Structure formats: structure tokens, C-alpha cells
Image 1 (tube, one colour):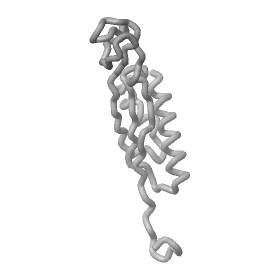
Image 2 (cartoon, helix red, strand yellow; image 1 turned 135 degrees about the vertical axis):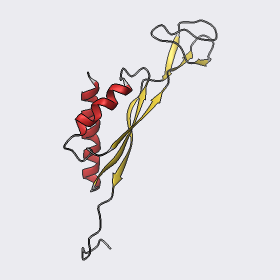
Image 3 (cartoon, one colour; image 1 turned 60 degrees about the horizontal axis):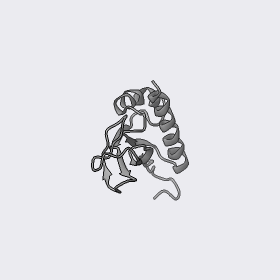
Image 4 (cartoon, one colour; image 1 turned 90 degrees about the vertical axis):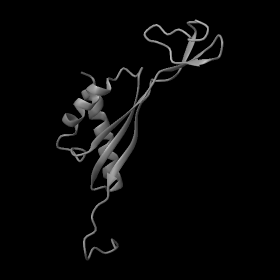
Length: 125
């Protein structure tokens, strides 16, 4: 399951950002997954806790936003949601399509936890 290696890469990126920003932890990781990305969102969701175990992301939520496949027809110029694996323009039946959405795999947002202020810390009040 390649989703485990993808989940590990997401966790590594999130942890790098959290450390760089001085965060106390990671509350949520939002990922955009296109229908044509080759990533199974359910498998990614199952792999995430394993990848996040013993990291600052261990208690974080994984939020997966899916992006449906979209294509623009080079013949008629119309956009459609073609069927795959054999995309055909819904408007004119052409096979000459340019994919415009659905191939995404993106770490879109992180929700970081702010470190608690402790009394007496200079510059922290």
C-alpha cells in the first residue's frame, strides 16, 4: 500500500513546519487528493495513524478533501467530468481531452498548536 509512504511523507512535512514555527504540536493536517492522483483516500486515512505514531502529529486529525476529475475538450472547448479510465467529452464525444483537475495531491493546510505561556518567561507575556 503506497498510501503508507504518502502518509509518512505528509507527516514528515507537517512535523518540519511545526518545528520550524515553534509549535507545541499539530492539531490537524488538511490534504487535497484528486480522483486521478492514484491515491485512495480511505487507505490514506487508515495509514495516517501508523505514520503519525510517536511524532508530534500523533494526535492530529487528518482532513482529506477530494477533487473530482475535470477535463477540457480540445475539440469543443467544453469542461466536463469524464469517466475514467476511458475519458470521453460529455458534450461532443471527442477523446481529445486535457485534464484540468483531479490529479492533485497536496498538503494544503496545517493547524498548529501554540505553545503555552509560562509565568516568568521573559518576552512571552
